[in-house]
Image (cartoon, rainbow, N blue to C red):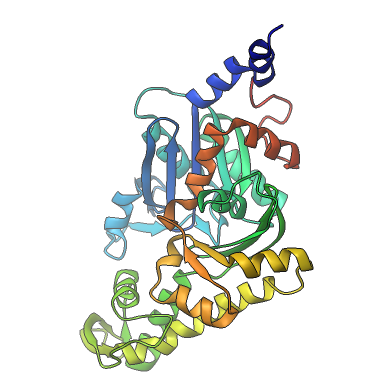
Length: 366
């Protein structure tokens, strides 16, 4: 048997071709769900929201359509986020939402997806893992490999599986901050804290209500965060915008002026907690690993990585270099997608995953 024949037999090219032709990657997050289809790229990027009729229990909208209703729902409709802090909070709604997004990703080409790679939060319990797998089964996905978010984010941020030196990746989502130290294609140390960029919004909503007497919604809080908030001291503390909502005392519509100087300490308090979690994770590392991190610094991924001044603040607090990955929101799904182009990477990861499959008795490559 020639070398080429042996190589083809070893890689099982037919099986691998079948794998990549019918595979999808899913980043199922608390704020957004991103679905990548091999050969087509990202085909779904929508809010992880579900609008439900409170009388009948029927789902009336999912994703972008549900987001348009959020804060302005009809009296018999409520919009919920079925995932909380990276795990399933409402199992039935998560099932329906994932099934909807997977159907949308297929684009009518297929009724059944044979395989999927899905990211999961570091340290989730087997009960939480099983809930995600059951949701995938409901979405008519035959087999699922679950890969930790930190590992996927590392690959999506430019770390290679065969790199023996350690890299530090900090993925900041809406509800979680995931720190992973990756070397030789595996996580050598990790920590997940259930705090993220949405906590800044929640803190702003609470402050404006308690100290300014105005109840505001999620959209207004997001606007304040994007336009005024920063992890570092704003250049112009007097910059202000008008925000509208409901007067707490009278119940009538109202509006206030709010400045960057007022918002800064609110956001900075949450940012400090996030960075403190990162700093704690970086302590006590083995000397060689610590030396690698000192040389290489930190890679920031996730939607929260784009929060103004966060990289600068993290750099100041850790005394390490910090870089934001290219398109940080897509780092996780991009890392998962690389498994399709590097199937031997996936084989190696499968050997190290304790409970990777929905159908544990089947070969992922069959």
